Length: 260
Length: 154
Image 1 (tube, rainbow over the protein chains, first blue to last red):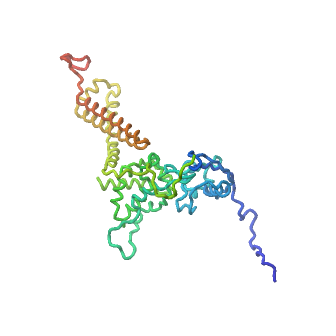
Image 2: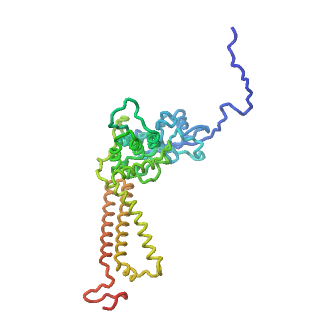
Image 3: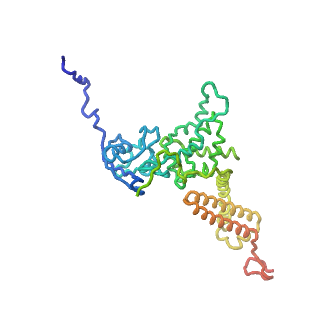
């Protein structure tokens, strides 16, 4: 029996300094995390964590490192960790972003990076908020296709132009970064919020949908589109780059042209 | 100090976030539209007002009691100033109303601020309208001309 086969030697000569895994620059960064645990105290506090991270790391990686290696009680939501599921919206350095899409190297690492739960929704623990009011507004605008015509035997066809009309608002991942960045929503939580309006927009301007008038009527409420003050916080916060304020303005125009 | 935590995803919505029934009617839409339209009209009215009062002729040096009396003798300027008064007051009131809605956090605060706002608006609009239409530069009280150098001797 021959001895165990050794890995064949590489035939390619690599110059020193190329390849290998240890080359990504690392740096020390302090994360200042907002902590809240109603079982212990009614007051929220700040906790600092100093971690060594790499240039390819995101805020979510730093939170993982903290939770897995330093303090397992730190609580936050995340699912896909790649900017699709919309679970990990949080307020990072005072701005709403997805922790999984924010690279640490893009932030000012010389100062502590503050991580807070999104504003305006009730905090449950640490970075986790109760999303129920947010989803309630979403449900109220009926975010599903309503078609009163005959059901086609195949798919419902639509021209490319008709599809383009609402393309921007199909990108929403319901992370609540927009709604929880809106100062009108912060006040009393009554406003439907940008996310609900964006998702209404997606169906109002869909040529296959027949319930646009009903959705416009819902958003003509005193807590509907007319509470928008066009501060553009939502457009700035959207991790998907949706032109949220413009979508709200289009819904306003649609209500106006229908009523006046 | 401990608190009871509800079972997760209980589907309950905190009372603060519950919307109290749909408000039927188009008031908010009309208010929004009024802000835009009155804003455009006010730009014309106010800059016209400033031009006529401050730039035309002797400009700012011509302004005195007699100048205002002369303007209000003309129905055109009476209407101009009336439109400016009403539009500016309603435009401003609606603006402050939305600010109160946005920033007052308690319903009672909101109610009282609005009562004060609407009372002030009503008083100013009524008073201003009366002044424009009842203005008399040469009032005669008990058959005696009140002092002032503008009026011809009786």
